[in-house]
Image 1 (cartoon, rainbow, N blue to C red):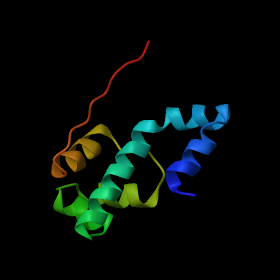
Image 2 (cartoon, one colour):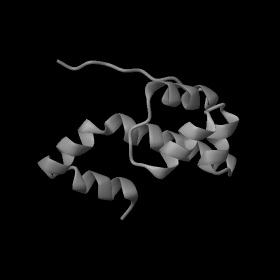
Image 3 (tube, rainbow, N blue to C red):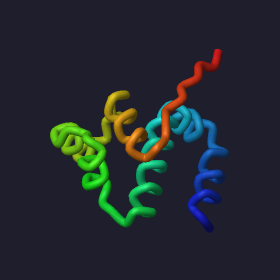
Length: 90
């Protein structure tokens, strides 16, 4: 079973889906960053430092499960040649 198949199976549970949806932005950011680092064969903290993210922000992100602030995300995405698009669903 692939990760995507496993995720699809988990998301059939309404409680899991609701929690996942509430954290979707962070999950998508982390996946994008990990894919980028894997492609470059570098560590996440190495990448973030090269992107200009301050060391204290990197340390805080790497040591916690807190959602990074928008500036942190924006800086990292810009270094990957990507941008963040936020939409509101009513």
